Amino acid sequence: MRLVSKRIEKDGKGTLALVAQEDEDMWHVYNLLQEGDRVRAITFRNVKTTGPTGSVKSEKVKILVTIEVSAIDFDTKSSEIRISGRNCEQNRYIQLGAHHTIELALQRKFTIIKENWDTMHLERIEMATNPAKTADLAAIVLQEGLAYICLITSYTTLVRQKVQVSVPRKRAGSESRHSKALDRFWQGIYDGVERHIDFDIVKCVIVASPAFYKEVCIQKLMEIAGKRGNKKIIACKSKFVPRHASSGHMHALREVLADPSCSEMIKSTKAFDEVKALESFFEMMNKNSDQAFYGYDDVVQANEAKAIRTLLVTDTLFRSKDIVTRKKYVKLVEAARENGADVKVFSSLHVSGQQLDQLTGVAAVLRFPLIIDIESSDEKNKEKSREAGTDKKGEKSEDKDDFEHDGSFLGDF
Image (cartoon, rainbow, N blue to C red; front, side):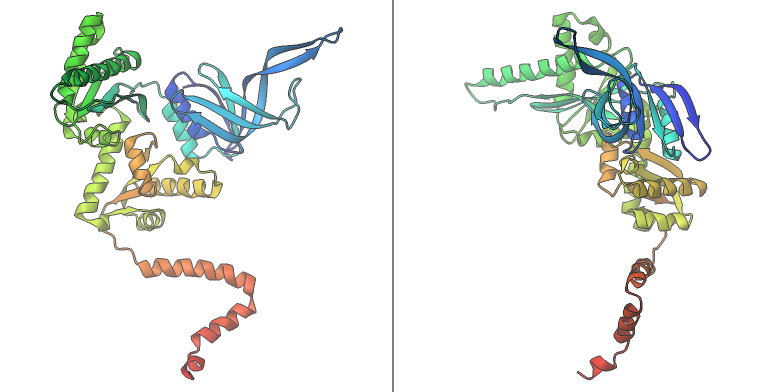
């Protein structure tokens, strides 16, 4: 991501002009955009003009448009972002307030205008514009008849291709059908590797499977590369590393990345930090549950006690359409950092981030065991509800409370 210009006032209001240079940059842009933001970008629109003879001519015109975002659509496979909204600035071809959709493209400048650029926004910009390249890990997760070819970047796990072939059982008299189906399966994996893995960038390809499929897969890839004369894949044979997985489905990738034997391969990527942090959380949950919390309310109480050592939070929470929800999680991150906590923001496109999402999206590993007083937290919630209720009910609610606390009437029965 290239930062063209940055103008942010002290109150947080301002504009950023950016140019997305890689597919991964689009994921960062998707996390930056929110409903209510304004986006200025080049777009194309079909314009009809009427000639002097009455003939109608249609032509595609390039225009600069600024829209107020009302809907955001991100396609992870093609890495395209489509933004819908109403035009904020009058121009020759689009009326003020007219609905329009623009598509953000690579190598094309666009500007994001926000009323408030908070801490998480600015951190995302800093990460995206960092020139260090860490998208150097690929993985093939497979079992018989099923394989996923993935690219593991610094912030996302991208499934580039799914290979699925129906393999009949090996029976007497039908061995040819079984072997032909497996040949199609290995060729499909080879085609995916050749198409999606750039060995000039990728340093390691983890081949993970149950049983012996990982070794057979590497062997078949080399055989097919030899037949097709692909010297690059043959020269990169040492980059293919076999590892055990419980299955050939995507969820098995998390356990593979958590394997200590893979640490040296992926330690330079952000994925390694995320996986290790999540593993330490689950280990602490098993050893001492009073030192591992999840859920917003419990984590907030732990932070108030200055007990958080590592805060785990997914970027899904910062994409919330509810501004209040986003602000409370931004406030939690800032407060935890002030108290000396190490904050890890997980990508929801990583398998580790998806697993954290299942645990409410926020968790914490504590410095010391902490026992939360459940009664006190319940009383706080009751007080909030009472305050809201007494404002509306007035004196009637007070009479009702007096009646409830007085047991003499109930005693008559």
